[in-house]
Length: 171
Image (cartoon, rainbow, N blue to C red; front, side, top):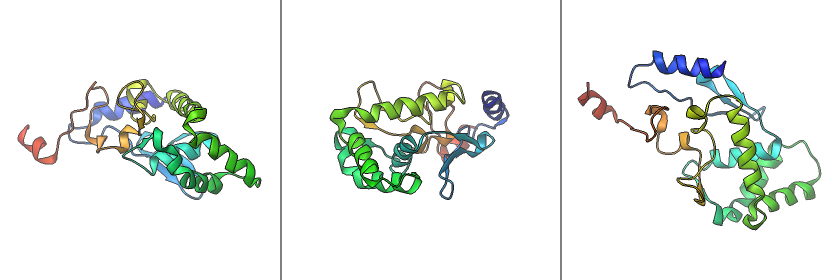
């Protein structure tokens, strides 16, 4: 269903209009939505959602070798969205994720990818999945947030981002 909606948006868009949805987080309910795709929700567990929000809050990305520097930020995010009262358990979960040697963060990347791929085809999902520039890259980010990919064609292998001036010159 969402794939059809996204494809219709793409086909009905003019070249300069956005093909991709922004990501919207409802701070009251801590739900993650894609408003241009009929407000579809990306459903994740609390801890996985906290990881996604951490990357959302850092649109240029995070070097996984430095993930420990984000421990306090992740702890605060998780504390806000998590209904658990056990602070030691929350703290230990955050410790595991921000210790790159445990590789726990990769489990959450996989869960995020799976959840998003259940909503849409890879052509669109690749814009919302936490990724790197190449396999094994330690710098991870959410592509749609980095460097204004909203003006890109989701079917292109390499994004061709046109500035407004470039668009007018190419008409």
